[in-house]
Image (cartoon, rainbow, N blue to C red; front, top):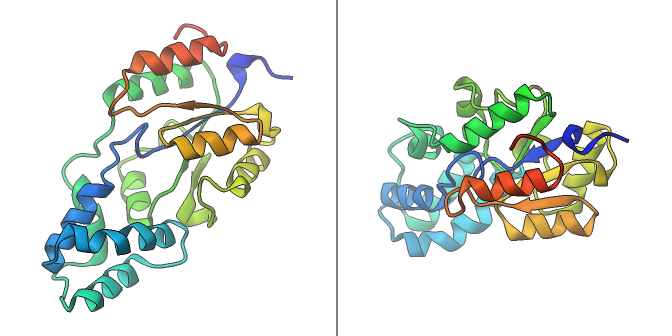
Length: 211
């Protein structure tokens, strides 16, 4: 058995480490296609999951949206998908400080994110996964989405720990709930709306020292 402070921590990315800008992305795509965001949103919400799962390309996502609206996109899909992060990675500074403290204590850190290929490429180019080593688990690459039980079982297998052997930090209630049903200790933390002290106190209560 490992000590609590040595337990791997698996962080969600968008919503915990990086600002979640899905609504802004939907508005940008709608603007590009000259349609109302409200009209695009039902398609966006369903099809973006397919892109995150690696079952649909970003090019096809934009092509289908354009066919539905009778419009033509004037910029490439990757440029459109990364536009919200064009000038700034939108990382939460206080979470970055916490990640560096945890890493310096030797605590194994991983990321498990429902994300799209262009965001994965951009974050890698900017070294935005630097705290996680080779433990970067992205839905579009592993072909599994939270909150499925399969994705948590896959992560436990890759970390070589039982399901109860790692901690999840995620901003989405449904992800935290699914994890807990499998016996995973999960902290729900939305960095946009919750103070960093909430996460620090929660981690300290689980035995992670000096937080």
